[in-house]
Image (tube, rainbow, N blue to C red; front, side):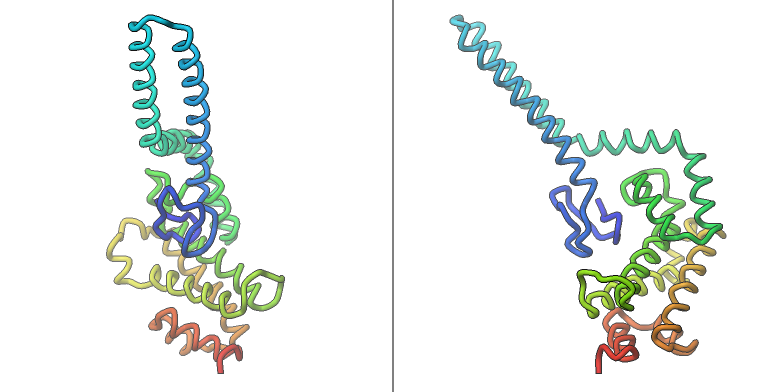
Length: 249
């Protein structure tokens, strides 16, 4: 699975994303379900063992042992397949609401509310862990970029007190810029051209414009400097922007 916040690869054992630090909600749901399965198994096992104590016949003992073995097999199968079952049920529920979801997504795009769109995708778990919604991959990634960019940009500006340093906020900002410019890059688009319909291209361009407008206003960057940013890696961006805002000498 991948992190719904930053898209990094995760395992079902990761409680938090090792890259962005956000909670792995899919893993939390999985562990909660497994806890329920384990509790029911333990209760059943206790009942079976009580029956064993009451029985003095070998046949009964063999039946009980077979039942315990069967329960163990069922528990193992449930452990291995529970996540897939949960995801299948989630996808089926999303399909029932597809028309409503598509209308809501369109409203967010028309209004330019990409933070709201990111929240909507996250709430409904449409991206990364849901099959059949590939057409929203680019739009969802752009919305996620905008949301994270804005969150750390406002903290960097001092609009609200956060828990990260200026350098950490700048690093996340540059991480999102790199991902944004990958979406803009024509060579990158050639890998999945079917995802770049007219709506997706519009969203990416709009997010790029909003992010770069903030960079121009806060960092005093001009058009030529913005063009240079697109050719930089994350570390180069950090030193370049950090130098413009006095974070690095």
